[in-house]
Amino acid sequence: YVAIAASYMLPQSTELLVCSCFAVGFAASTLWASEGAYLGVCAQDMSEATGMALTDCTSSLNAKFFAIFSVSGTLSSICAALTMGLLHDSVQPLFGALTVVGIIGVIMLACLPPARQAKHAKKGGTSTLRNIESDPFLEAGP
Image 1: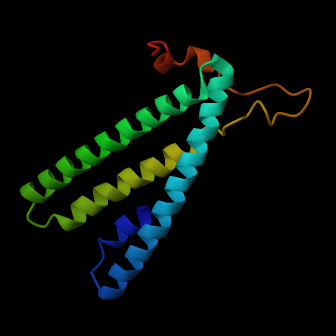
Image 2: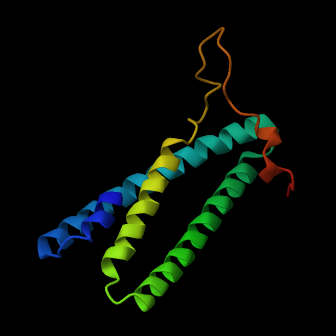
């Protein structure tokens, strides 16, 4: 996504548009499949650590993900509308900002902790799984 957003700051061509469509399709399918697998494993870990039903944990994590996804879509549309409405030559600043946001997103994804750290710890080693019971999102409860 970062490379695609950055490519739109270059002069446009039909070839670039076609390549971007294929790249977005591949990136989206990979990202969504990875997100689903990661949330599924995190839900299992959360269920084991808290004693909550797996379906409740899955619902909770999916709801949080969808809320973040929805807010990001709304905010990006507002930012794009403001940028395009306020600037005459808005293509480069808009896609420059999208590139920066994409880079921040890549860094955040790289910093996600691996799921199931405790289950893969070697015997005699210490578990690095964070204490899910102290998660502030779980304090409210159902």
